[in-house]
Image 1: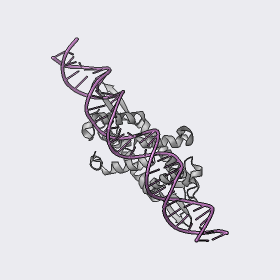
Image 2 (image 1 turned 90 degrees about the vertical axis):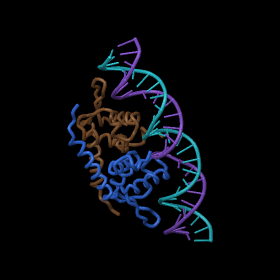
Image 3 (image 1 turned 90 degrees about the horizontal axis):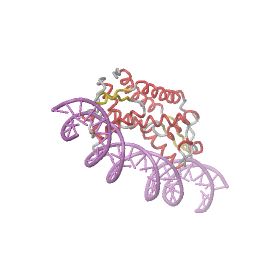
Image 4 (image 1 turned 30 degrees about the horizontal axis):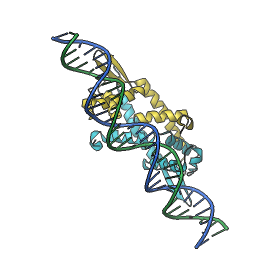
Length: 107
Length: 107
DNA sequence: ATTATGTGTCGTATGTTTGCGACATTAGTC
DNA sequence: GACTAATGTCGCAAACATACGACACATAAT
């Protein structure tokens, strides 16, 4: 039950980040931001078939995971990809999976 | 609510696979199988601080996601990495993230 | 100062995941 | 056949995630 103790930190962080991208809405948001590099704000909820409230929550999770950034710009908020955070995630992902790929499979 | 309709198939599948690796226990199992290429069976539950039942459930999820294979070998079951499934996952992951990395960030 | 607009946060309902003990199953051993 | 060992499956409880309407908050326009 003592989650903090049971598993290796790096496994826990990779798990945490994977969870963030484990929802189609969040992937769709990232995809949308990649396409419209103009970092448009929450009219993302027109593009995605979910209520504005729900989209806002997904945006928060993405922001907390440092996969996107949000900048206040007058009335609107401009969201965009956080390439630093994305690269960090990529690095963790790669190092885990290259370990798996190096392993010999013997069955 | 009609999950099947809302999002693109490829997003949904990437989300589904990401969810599988979004738990430290499942990552720990994969790591263990990579280290001990001898594909040892469910004494994984000695290595991981969870009950045998719980480990067995995680193994099932990994198997259903085609990230591992299990072969009956007399009384024991030999689990090992499913490199084909892992590669497939890697491909999906890469194609999504290379799209993100190509995007210009404008804020 | 009132109103309209773009947002975020709270509370709540409903669904999903996690973890586990108790039971079932199957393969070898005596 | 009865016994043990290695597993898997069922059913429950507790924790967590998802979705949303109602409300609160700011900024800008009138």
